[in-house]
Length: 267
Image 1 (tube, rainbow, N blue to C red):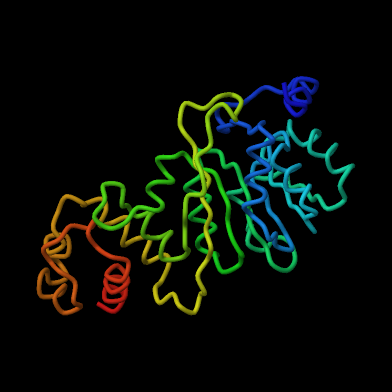
Image 2 (tube, rainbow, N blue to C red; image 1 turned 180 degrees about the vertical axis):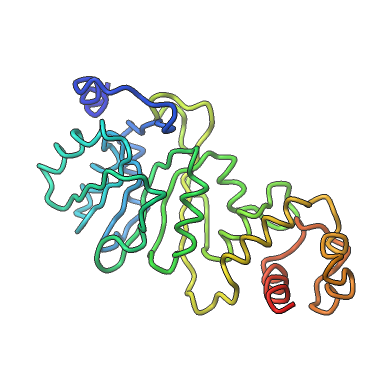
């Protein structure tokens, strides 16, 4: 039994299914995750530190400042005990979805997180909206979600998440994490994904409008574009912006999504 798991038992901690709590206890895995994040930014933000196994792996790398965001009040005592050993720790007992994470800390910042899978996509979208405020994001997702994040046009897993993520960042799966590394053991497979944000100046689209567009077209993904955009003029509208009217949303490239978003904004 890991020391962190023993500590949870001492504090009589009860895992909460509603918060999607599956904690990483394998220090070999957490050390590997931390090393993939090198070089560390001035501020490291960890969302959902749980019992602090990943936190301790990050601290081994002499981080300047680490901000822990933990929603579960029953874990704060355990994290406060860790803070007594390291003055670089700052703790927020908050819901990550309600915090302006991109404003926390000083200087360059990055996120390292074992995200609760039930809110992982929502957190990612929030971070992507302000991706220019981060040097990188290194986060765990359900393997199925990770595959959607990196999916290419024409593949079965290509989705609105693929488009939005790849327009804002260069994303790649670093490695898969076995279910045995977690407690309680999750029913799904996990993958570690790293995101390197693109320069904001190179992004010629409106993020919220792109969210609306991708949500709209992927809800009609079995239809041809000429049918989806019939109100805008169908084939003639699409031909005018050099987008083929006879394809489905899953075949649109990132550039074509940008053309569509710009044209619809001006339409």
